[in-house]
Image 1 (cartoon, helix red, strand yellow):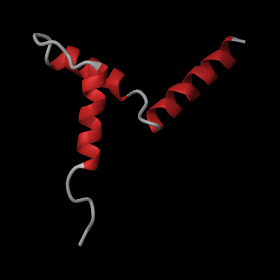
Image 2 (cartoon, rainbow, N blue to C red):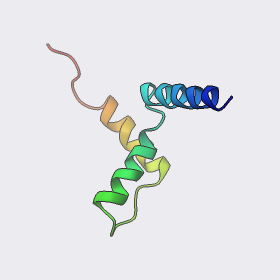
Image 3 (cartoon, helix red, strand yellow):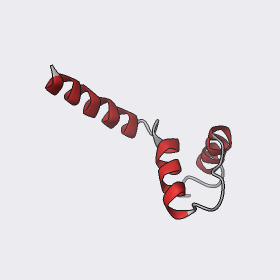
Amino acid sequence: MQRLRSFFGLAWSMIRSLATDDAYDKYLAHHAHAHAGSPPMSRRAFYLKQQHCKWTGVTRCC
């Protein structure tokens, strides 16, 4: 039973990673390591920044 839970836990984390659902968690881990003196962005601010970066600017070749 423990091996099955371990497998599903690993599968779930892979799905979250592929869907970039864990981006904020990764950001928090990076921020805690690299920028310990400053407060991290809120989840909402992080999401808005990601959306702005994704949808702003030229994203085509011509």
